[in-house]
Length: 136
Figure (cartoon, rainbow, N blue to C red):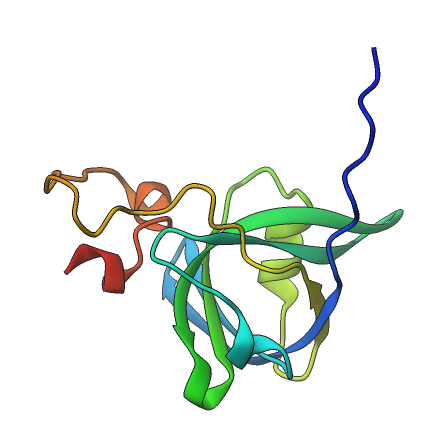
């Protein structure tokens, strides 16, 4: 059984502004672009980044770590795994000036500001989806 494809999401151009190693297995990548200030971002939102791959590009989903519309900044924290898939390969090689394509944030699943406080626990990989702004 096949399902009809949804309308394609728009391609938003961006470029890498800065790359930092947070730990030995996590990298923070700051992206800037003309559409970044107008993105609708809520705590817990994630977006698709189209990263280079052997056969063209691959779509990878990342949680948004920080969004600063005033400086057109969008930060992602990416856990680097030993299995070198397209997302990890891109994160390891990313350099300032590299161009990338994003899709608008997905906000179907986000944190509920009025919800009951919860204890979150995990290793570095588990920390990625919980940006500092969401931890209070």
